[in-house]
Structure formats: structure tokens, C-alpha cells
Amino acid sequence: MEEKKNVTVETTADEYSKTAVPSTARKSFLSVLIISLGYVFVVTSMQAGSVIGVSLSFNSMVWAVLVSSAILTVLSCIMGVIAAKSGLSFGLMARYSFGQVGTWVPVLIVAITTIGWFSIDAYLIGDSAHRLFSCDFTEGTVSGADSVTVQDGMTITASKGTKWMNMLSNIAVPIVLIFGFISIIRAFNDVGGVAGINALVKEDSITFAKAVALGVGSYVVGSVMFTPDIMRFAKNAKTSIIVMIITIMVGNSFMVFFGAIGSVVYGDPDIMGVLALQGLLAPAFIVMVLNIWSTAQGCVYSGSMSLSSVIKVPRNKLTLVFGLVGTILGCVGFYNLFGSYINFLSSTVPPIVGIVFADFLTKYNHGYTDLDSLPRADIGGFVSWIVGVAVTFIPVLLPSINCVVVAFLVKVIFNKVGKKQ
Image (cartoon, rainbow, N blue to C red; front, side, top):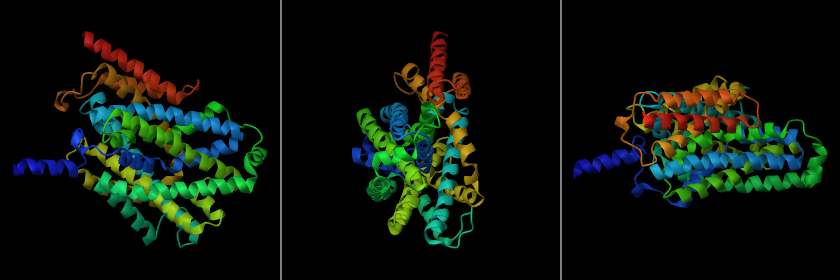
């Protein structure tokens, strides 16, 4: 009896990184919603919004944001439903689609993604404090005890799991939303409403498709890789769908709109910079820390979760490694590679949705088998992924959607042929 109790405690502490989340451990609708919204407050969404805002008229900008968010919502709902039904994290889903050893490819992509994102957040802590208070930070680097302390806090909340992440998000989400809405209203008043914004951006300088692609690329990693790690705790598929619609259509659209309006009106896409220019210095600092913290803890959590699914190291220890490596990269200027980093993710991540979805519908439609029965590598998964990545470089319609559809179709064909054989 005592031995069974210890197993349960260890599984719970490790956040079910190697097993499906049981029905007894599922969380409430509000809990998964708050955690999910904490993930979506990400700097890339605001930066994508800044480019869209200065490149399109107001009406075109609004439609581009809504269309890109709708696409992200579909991707998120697919991954969310699979996670809610199976209880699997992204790392375990990837193992079913790529094999025992083959799963290292998508897992390493997650690791690179999350460490890179954490390092960017680490950089922003120091840079933002420098801009707000003229602290003694070296330009282009992160230093100072305050910055390191916040980074340690991000790692600690992520290592403690969804319970602590939920407590932080309960504070961060309302504050960011409240001051964000206040700032947007002030921006419209300062510029003279929609007419004032249209006067600043009179004509489109990029295509509508390019703007949509920017919007999709800003959070596609979150929609594909981070969503399962949250939605496996949802009580049912319906809950996951509602949560992801609110998260993307409201939360993500809000962040992109904020970046777009702030860039057009004040020449600064960052929520912290805009609030400071509006004379809200203290709220700017609080919002900046909470905004970055809620995103960074999610990155560390999901990265450690995926890596823990393939190696025999406790997840909470891996979070410390992620935090240390991310902080070091922040100090050496990884932020300067931000553009190349986003392009890499936009090409390699979206096809995975099509592959996982194809397997869920045609290969594991009667339930996921035991992990030990999986092959070392799933050739169909790799071929589908490579073809999907190649499609992202073909500038027809929306490459970020094309690659998902193509990867899905190729994997379905492999699965059908495999069943016949």
C-alpha cells in the first residue's frame, strides 16, 4: 500500500511527463484557461503586430489579425482535443508519430524553442529595466542582481508545475489585460481614433497574405507544442476547444493589436514601452515583469516536459538546466538572432500538427498503444515532416497552412499503406 502511494506522489510531482494524465488529476475550466492565457502573452505577438500595424491600413490590419488568430485557433483546437482525449503531453505525442528514437527530433526542436524563448525573456528583463529606470545595465546585455532574481523566479514557478504556474497567472493575466486595455484606449484618444490611425498609415505596404503569415508565425509554436502540455489537464475535449478559442481569439489577438497600435501611434510595439510613454511608469514595470514571467515559465515548463519524456531525469531538475542555459544565452546576446530563430520555427514546427492529427484519426483512432510497442523510428512521420517543411518555402497562398495540410495527407497515405501491408 505504501509503495503505491509513493508511485502516485512521484508521478504527480513529475507532472505526468512519462504517462497520460488520469481523469482524477484533471483541472477546472478556469484553471487551464488562466494558465493558457499566461502562455499567450508573448513578445513575438506584439512584434508581429508592430510590423502589421505600420504596413496595413487599420481595416486591413484588423482583418489580418483576426484571420491569423482564426488559423492559430484551428491548430490549437486540433492539438488541444487530442491532448484532452489522450492525456498526453506534446513529447509523448511526438513519440507516437516519430518513434522511440525518432522522437528526439521534435523534442530537440521544443528544447531549442523554449530555451531560446527563455533567453529572449531574460534579455528583456534587463533591457526593460534599463529603459524604464536607466539602471546600470550594459547595452545589449543582461546583467544585474534584479534581472537574475526574476529569472530564478521564472524557473522556480515552472519547476513547481501547473499549480504554481496557475497562481502566478492568476495575478499576471488580469493585470496585463487591465492596463493593456487602458493603454489602447489612451492610444486611440491620443491619435484621434480610427481616422487618426488611417491618416498615419494610408496604404498597404505588404500583402494581406504576408501579414496573415506574420500573425500565424508569431505564436504557431505555442499552438502546436505548448497547447498539449496544458490541455492534457482539461476534463474533456469541449473544455479544450472553448479554452483555446478564448486564448487565441481574445488573448493572442489582444497582444497583436497592442503591438500594432503601439507601433503606429507611439513608434514602440512593446507593452512596457507604450505604458511608459503614456506616463504609466510604475504599471509599466509591473506589467513588464508579469508579462515576461508568465511566458517564460511556460517555456521552461513545456521544454522540460518534452525532454523528460525521452530521458530518465526528473522534470523539475531539467527546469533548472533550462533556466541556466536560457540565462546564459540571454547574456551573450541570443536576442540578436531573433529573426532567424522565428523563421526556423515557422518552417519546422507547423507540419507536426498535420502528422499528429493524421495519426490520431487513422492510426490510433481506437486508442494509443503501449509506448514500448512503438518502432525505433517512424519513417512515415519523418517523410511527412520533411515534405511539410519543404512546402513552407513555396510562396503560394499561406505556406504555414499549406505545410500542415500536405504533411497530414502524406502521413495518412503512409498509415493507409502500412495497414494494408
